[in-house]
Length: 264
Image (tube, rainbow, N blue to C red; front, side, top):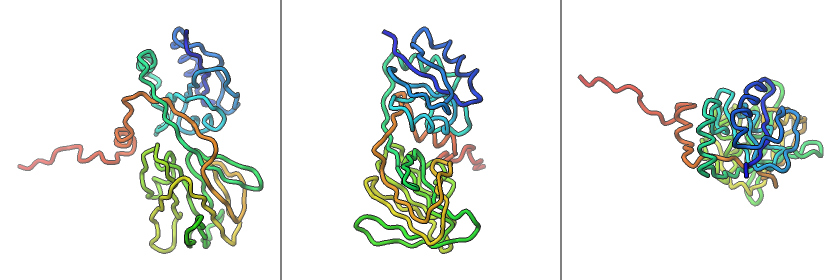
């Protein structure tokens, strides 16, 4: 019996999604093809296929409970395992049962009595160019104070997103940790803090700040509490997937010297 799937695509990648559907339809029963923005709930399928970049995978991850297989149609992609020209490789991996489930946790933050889940990160920052004092409170630990533009709180998945550009630590994506990073601090405090993902984190400031969840502004408040969400999402990866190889390929981290030095 053929496995079944729903295909979600970025709004400018419908042609690619339908082309993918045609090429795999003899191996996989395609229940539906739709834009990721439509948030059509996938039911009765074995997995979902996402055609787009990491942003599209993030959108789908928030409303589906099915495992996700990503096909890259963006620039830097950490959440998609295949390129659009690797359809044959995907079908071979599927037939040989080489796809493994990779479970990822999310964060949740409450803003104006509404809960928002974050795949990558939560940003809490001043909308103006002014700096402010941010108090970080942890269950059972002393408070920390930062004079900065804001605070970034990221998952392991999000360590290669905004966190990376701020100089935060790269974390292997299945790690059960939360990373906290002050944004443009006044003092030399631009070091991230890594805590267990069971830690509950409260950030307070006297100023009204924007709350940005995975790149989307969701509200303005002067206090937030961030903790591990009750939800998670699952990626389907080929068993030969190598996160460190992707790091070297996508961002050049740990690549070393590419040309040998002429030692004369």
